[in-house]
Image (cartoon, rainbow, N blue to C red):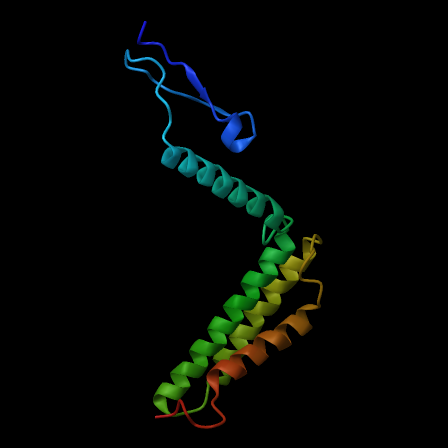
Length: 153
């Protein structure tokens, strides 16, 4: 008799027709204290708010799969890293960047960018390889120079 799990209706509190199973432990139906009802109501409201927010926001970034885009992005990143490394080495020694090493960075980028463009499925990287290379070079210039001399020892 007392081991059944009757359901307590929360219709009156939430107006949503929700019910919660509740164990009686042989003493009949227990009334839910007002404090518990308030907590349950707040939980339902909080969970609902989170779900609505998540559904409304949607994905922040959604990329269409593309070998071209990924190849060009990777090549540009490698070019920036390569040229920045050559420049940093020259700064450390107090000299000028090795032009042969800088040319090698450019050659690697050109080869990788051309290979990626050949895939023909670019959606994001719609610029030419030369335009992307100019942006990468600009990035290296920005991060490796200090017009005010603030980063010079």
